[in-house]
Amino acid sequence: MRRLDKNHLSLGLFGFNCSGGLGVTMVPERWDASWDNNQKLARMADDAGLDFLLPLGRWKGYGGTVNHNGSSFETLTWASGLLASTRDIMVFGTVHVPAMNPIVASKQMVTADHIGRGRFGLNIVCGWNPDEFDMLGLSLKEHERRYDQGQEWVDILTRAWTANEPFDYAGDFYRIRNTAMEPKPWGGTRPFIVCAGNSGRGQDFAARNADMLFTFLSDLDHARDAVDTLKAAGAAYGRTAGVFTSVSVTVRPTRKEAEEYFNYFAVENADTQAIEYMVIGRGMDKPGTTEAQRRMFRLRAGAANGGFPIVGDPDDVARTMQQLSDIGLSALAMGFTNYLQHLPYFRDEVLPRLERLGVRAPRRAAA
Image (cartoon, rainbow, N blue to C red; front, side, top):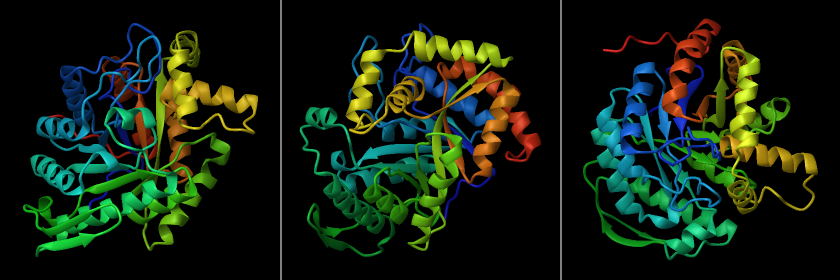
């Protein structure tokens, strides 16, 4: 089975296929998700020894002043292009189950996997945004049924990747006959699968199907419990699954400079209308939510698309990442306000510190 285990803590870039990336900000240097920038960044990450590239699956923006994520690349064709442009890094496609026929998707993914010689990974999303599904002419099913459909989709996908003879499938959502697919995934092993699950039903779906499970972190004090819960869910299916989370990284030579820049892009220049759409659409502002939790949700949404902000000098950032590794996280999916501008400093200052701390293997020299 394929794994992300070259490093004790895997690191990747998240969301740069979409305008703005993770930061819902109006600053002039906000991420421009052009193809040239995507390709240049992928090569920079590959040369830096990062482990993966993970796209957001977006069909529509969040509105507001800058229409955050309003411009985005479809992720399977995006992954194919970046796999052809890189050497070692794993590249994921993020697929909304209701939007993709499982046999068509399986063929597209195998094509990407052969382009990358086994470096394609799959991020499965069962769907949450009704506006996007309205745009696609699809109905977003009731919460529990989304995962029922998702399981049928995964079952068919897996059969297509492994069956040596034509097969039939008759479920509640899909009915196919005399189905056969060649070629199989590169090297005879299936792509690495990641999946998020915040509800109990979602966690169960992820634990049953994914090699690595996603969780949002509220704070470091409760992070270990969140990680242990997901690992236990995987173990219930006889699986040893990793756990990862998303983070925004703001690193500067001094902690003061980092905190000032974070305040500049995530607070003073936050696109509040787009943030409100995101927070309410994802159900973060529920009855019983405290005012402190509301403020945290909005700050996290603005800074990191809901992820965990890491802010400080290179030592601060490296120590925080070591803490996250120590509590059991296997990987961090990172966002930067401007990936091309900010990744080089992280590469040069934080990665060597992580190597000295023992959570990252020494980087190989670029060819």
